[in-house]
Length: 223
Image (cartoon, rainbow, N blue to C red):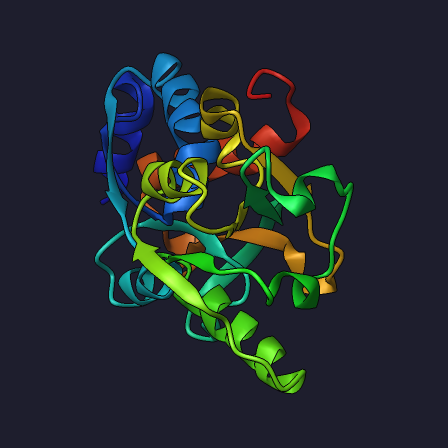
């Protein structure tokens, strides 16, 4: 093993890094992280697998992947979680919708509207359902979809509003002429975390990718 490690250092670290990430992180920043990493690590390959956040944690715990990136509201005491970037949920509406003129809005004030559900946000959907029930209300779903593009297309057709991460849908918002109003609720600011079984047990290639991801928080090259 020592000879193998020394060989990797002398010839340049090589290997395959298996990454699991949730859809929001993939849309917002993961491809840029991978691209910048590969440019300076020519002998390392990265395999990216999109999963919902709960499956990301499970995949890391089971050893299916080396590194995971997901939401912080998924519990996982069997994995190490490092706080990473944050994003913010908002209400995405058609330009003619009554909420379009608002600069911010509380989630409870959206419950009179029909909504487009986003199935990939299972944990957040459960949270929103509990918040609605706390106010004696229910979320009225007109449709449920699994992609940001589909959600924004239905909003563009004025069939409902959608609760989505503002950063993840910026391209769609511009393309479809939609408005995104930040939610006032504390839970609307969400943190991403980096998951590993144990940092010190990562392969050389995976540790290099982990350090690159963590280090990106202090760099401006990734936006």
